[in-house]
Amino acid sequence: MLSYRHAFHAGNHADILKHYTFSLVLDYLNQKDKPYCVIDTHAGAGMYALNAEFSQKNKEFDTGISHLLSGDNQPDSVQEFTKMVKSFNSASQVDLYPGSPKIAEHYLRKSDQLRLFELHPNDYKILVENFSVNSKQTKTVMGDGFNGIKAVLPPTTKRGVTIIDPPYEDKQDYQRVVSSIRESLKRFSTGTYIIWYPLLARPEAEEMVSALRLQATNWLNVTLSVSSIPKEDFGMFGSGLFIINPPWTLPDTLKESLPYLVALLGRDKSASYQLEYEIS
Image 1 (cartoon, rainbow, N blue to C red):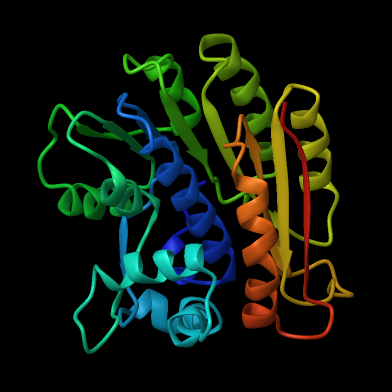
Image 2: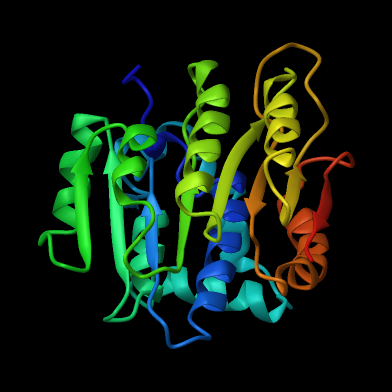
């Protein structure tokens, strides 16, 4: 299915949870001199113009990054994420929101690598424009990231993080995530894997997380709900991340920041977060 375009949702509450947490993992990897590789299986366009037609249609950023940019008394880690988003914009106005590829590029050092997969031809064209030169450090591939990941694991750097965030428009994506992780861990058992998923009034995400837990020794699962569960089987009321081999520092950082994000991004009194982990 090639109908999904992330530009409709750029900068929403799900992006905040995903990209903020992603930035924490990258910052942790940068604490060691040894190089690492970032693999993005569903890279999208890389950068999103908030004043463009797609973003303006639903203006989901108004309840996401716009709230964050105006928030006061931010925890230090949230403040660093906000500064990072602002670094892509002018001092007077925020018109651009970085996707995970641009966030990765922001943190990468000269010795690190970036591998980007995107299947949608229009988004891939924009992705290539945002990463105009395929260098030794950054390579873009038009193709299915679930299949492409097999060719880049294990990375030559021997350290790495893979972010997997399919649209889940096709329910088979849930099972493809589980199968992809199973195969990826055989190739690269020490890598960090970040799997994003939507919170919907359906069981597929919960079933996927249960299956992922069985494959992981060290894991973290975090969810951010911004509203109550809709009575109808329609609409995303939050999102989650299941992380395999997370940084040991991540739980404490999230415990500090999640109450702030709930208060800032929540739409009603049902807004909440959940954080579970097993890290040895």
